[in-house]
Amino acid sequence: MANRIMKMSFLSLFLASACVFTACAEVGDARVPSVSTGERSEPATTEIANPKIRKLLASAEEQLEVTTGYTQDYFSIAYPNGDVPAETGACTDVVVRAFRRAGVDLQKEVHEDMRTNFREYPQKWGLTRPDTNIDHRRVPNLQAYFRRKGKSLPITTSPAAFKPGDVVSWDLDERGTTHIGLVSNRRDPTGKRYLIIHNIGGGARLEDRLFEWTITGHFRYF
Image (tube, rainbow, N blue to C red; front, top):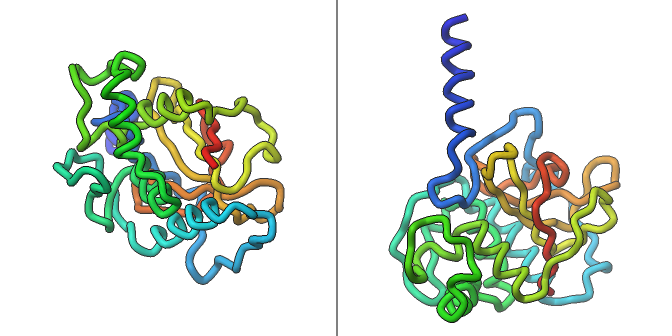
């Protein structure tokens, strides 16, 4: 009993603290298994006319085989097109890597917008100027960027509103623990909604998580 109480207290303490960079939380759930390589069938692509979305989704799926770890650590990286080690990263890195395949470097885009509109972005980290190493790896900054560029869509609980290539952000615990992922073009077993490609602690995964948490943002870039 004592061990159980200690484990529950540790989990509560962990969830109460937002990610180091407010990127996403390392919160797994054994009840929602990821879809393994062997279980994934070839998805239909006829509905995806936009070649950029096809490239974005191809990159996201490749990450499922490469990014097997998770980290919120701060890295000094190149600019532009800088990246943390491919085998690891946070939830934001899934999105950033996928967008690069589609021709959009969110590291560069977010930085350039923040340089001239710094006060339009969340003032959460005590910074007085942009930082190319981490700004694009923070969920609130990506949310602000997408909204500023007119890419935001209404938040809804209708599965039909979410299309392959969309970006979705969540509040994991109603206390500001943020998370972000991509809508894939693979459906859940019922065929009613698309699965999500994201990294919430165990590497990039393909999972049925769209309505698992409170949605705080729905964005369609392409």
